[in-house]
Length: 471
Image (tube, rainbow, N blue to C red; front, side, top):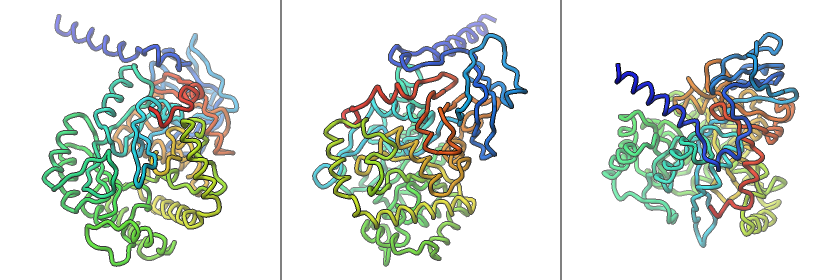
């Protein structure tokens, strides 16, 4: 009896401890109550179902306990009520190609800087309540950030951490580690799985045997493997059993002419992509193969967005950058105006292929990949990704589902997250506008609810202005 009592008290103490927040986190919280209701709101629930109007959502102890038409849904006495008139609620975004680092050009390659302070806040500010890192340069840092967020000591989303890039020596990125032989792969997978990572990422210059061992070892432990490929084709990787491929079809070397087996030729890969007809036989066969093999595609359109007549930082995050980075980006942006027609054509063609993959039954998830030339900034880029999907012809309901429920399903947390439904965790975004009439209203995000706790989006964005690129 005493043992049972001890266990009950211990579990209660853990629950209360998890609900405590440091002062640094508390300053961003605007709704911190056991129970509340959002009334008279437009709802896009993440299931892909038709948009509902005049809805009331009741939350108790971080869970959705009632949901329905406002004139039919009972609201318990003495709970906080939030007027949702003229506003929209969607599920918290679940994004699958995120990083806690930011890249900047450095001599003939890129230098990678860890954004341990700014990016967790920016992700949450942009409505990301759950994310997977799509490869890590400092896995232990990412694991610590995840732990401290869970403990209420840091502000940020729920994190699923991917291990270090599994790669053989190629591009001179000093922060990457390189394997010398296949024997190292299983050691990496099992070491970092023991540390708590939940997926692994293979990169540009691996061999088929590298991938085979990675998939076998990860799958033994119930973990998944994704890839940004070049030496291997999408067909190679899908047939080996990779779970996920990154960047839509932008990283596919399948169309390279006279491709050498297990050799990365970036120029040939790009040339092949540009040459492949929008409705070509090869792309349609590849799409069918990926669907047959249940290979998931992550679309990351923001990182490939062209320059001409678009924002310097897509999504509006220019002011988040450090002043010297702003200056460099602005100069690059001005030089590129009117000179990226080939990039625009490839950008649009890839989006059509991604939509075809989705429409034919392929499983599509989304992310941002804050790398490239530095124009992709956490949080802002996530909102922009939703906008791009709608601009590419996805319905608003489809775009939200891709960025919420689909991500939750891939991570295996869809019983708890990803949709606005009774019994699920209250990860909700309250937007001050109607995104069904103008998707850019997603930038009017007001409150981000994570586990039923409401965070001020604007204040989070403001707190790191001018600091991205520093820390």
